[in-house]
Length: 299
Image: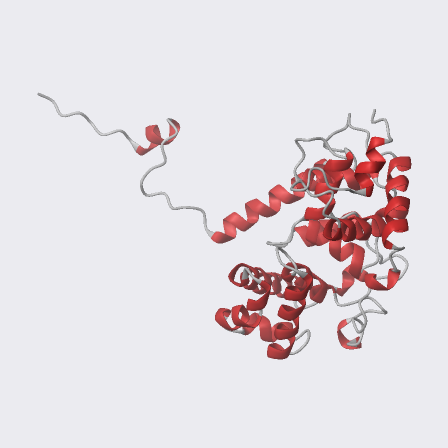
């Protein structure tokens, strides 16, 4: 009786079977794939909404909600776009542009936690390594960075993201600086699109984080969609039900008037934090946005 010949690796691969000798993708490969995916998604919807047949919000609807929320919560002040003291280190800034890397780190620390906790984490990071001493953070033992930002929650993930970001910036630009993104000289000023592409090309930096840096650090018109903005946008019928946060941001970036992007973002977050009536857990609660929708015909 003849022995059955083993299947060759070539046939196994052509049949969709991964040979046992194959190794899983490296972290560098995974990061490269993530970068390519983010850039492709951004380029796909930079000029066209992921929901081209969905026409909300109109300019009029955006202004209605802005006026409603500003009357309820007060007009947002522009000074929060550039935090006090953000330009106190001239060696690491250009003109009056805040330190872009610092803004990125602050935004990373703010993820999935309260403002109080993220501020405490940033304060501890500065006291441990010195403010904007990025080389010290990059060279520090991982555990020491984790310990410094522990109060902000998800410290392991955030420490890994921050150190990886700093290593990538140094490798790409030869220094711990992204101040070229805030260049204001004629002919050197980068477009919002070009800045967004560079920021999201770094591992751990998504569209929302990049948009926050554009909006608050660089003073550009960009509409960041966080948890509160996303929830209220769905309540208002500004995005389709199947939209996720990333696609919602791509859609709203094109539909919210440029002059409202800063104020509306701030007001929607303020309202989302303070109003229990518009929370899904308070179905019958009072909310000025719910009252607005009752008197409005949605087309």
